[in-house]
Length: 175
Image (cartoon, rainbow, N blue to C red; front, top):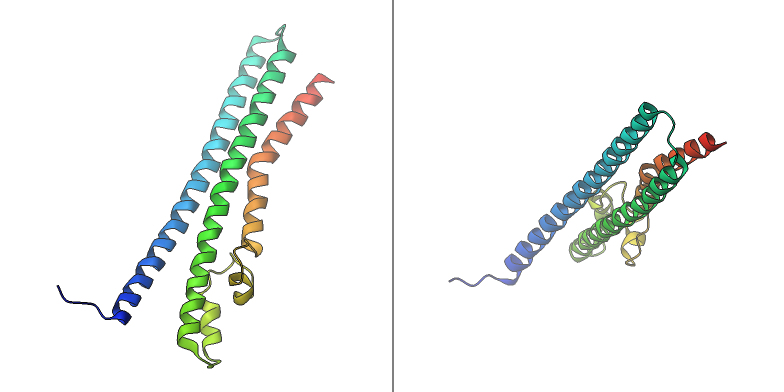
């Protein structure tokens, strides 16, 4: 077996790492959206069936207890789903941060003192997911940047808004 020189080994390793990290980002996105869609489907299907059966039955003696129990269950499931979602989002952004650090290291290694690489550096970072300054995004392991916080907002909208609407609706029925 022929020996690889250092540059070939480094190049192959970098390509492997970049490919693996890009695949991981896509897999995390896929898992996050499957979780969100599954949650919304189950949430609205179950509550739709419960509300339909309550309407069909007319008056139910234990309606308050049923609604309270189901509301509590919805809160617990929502908290659990939000926790799993935020875990996947954190992991996704850690991979993005590591990939951006890898890109920065490659440019720093090739760059020297040439300013022309700065434009190239800006195009390498994963757009919309990290801090606007590449160097600020790669100086720490913190999940800085607007992309992570946009995902947190989406998490809140997907999980908490339907739950709040449901709880407010049931509280208005009791009045």
